[in-house]
Image (cartoon, rainbow, N blue to C red; front, side):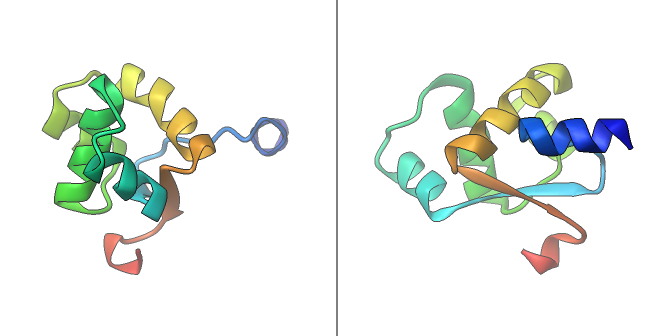
Length: 92
């Protein structure tokens, strides 16, 4: 309960296995215009190619360690490049 309150106050997302992430229009634009670089470009490109994906799927596709992805994902959410969704990929 305290963890949920902390997450709401800080804007942090839980990176559970049931959460899938997909590109927003802004994220798609960043990839298309080449405005992203490095690990951010890798993650956004995977989401553009594969569609909504879990952290594990992003890690498998990029070969980036889960802890590193877990550090970047909340930043991409806050920047408006991706959005989380709990549930099945088809719901995106």
